[in-house]
Image 1 (cartoon, helix red, strand yellow):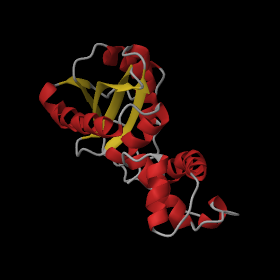
Image 2 (cartoon, helix red, strand yellow; image 1 turned 180 degrees about the vertical axis):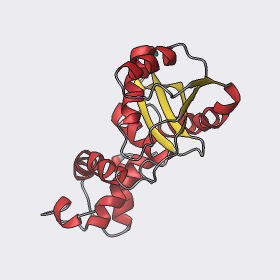
Image 3 (cartoon, one colour; image 1 turned 90 degrees about the vertical axis):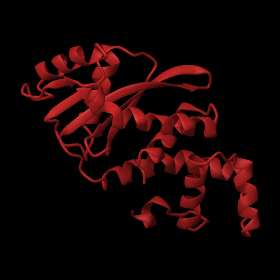
Image 4 (tube, helix red, strand yellow; image 1 turned 90 degrees about the horizontal axis):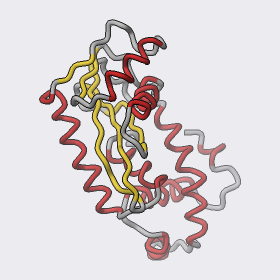
Length: 206
């Protein structure tokens, strides 16, 4: 990371900014919690300063780190689950490879073919994703429609089969318990913070 550019003109050291942003996004800490924690370390920060760092560097860090993710293999598993954000029900779509490496995820207010298609297009565009040789799903009727349309658009090879085999998707379904646990720890935070949390849990910013 080119710290001399991203942190140019900042009063605090880059390591302090990075640590503070990561703690806020990853753990169940308020801004005032972080202010107190930093005071114990001899640093006196305003909570508004930390919030500015989160808004400024959160998206930038995510974008930069994605470029260094390990390439996934070509056997995809896709699934969806629901979570609540600020009391609203949202669907978390997620794709992994056969080794459990996260390909990408997508949050949607709806669970339908349009959402499935957007999710798959996003996953296909991921810089570390290998074009799927096969895609395994849980039987949701939205996936055949979405994949058929993506094949017509030549986003997915026509030779790529959609397999509906529940046992092959156990790995991703078991994984979803972690995002449920993470949501409980974080409470019903904003959509943006939930997105950062999902990245952390599933290794997209590890």
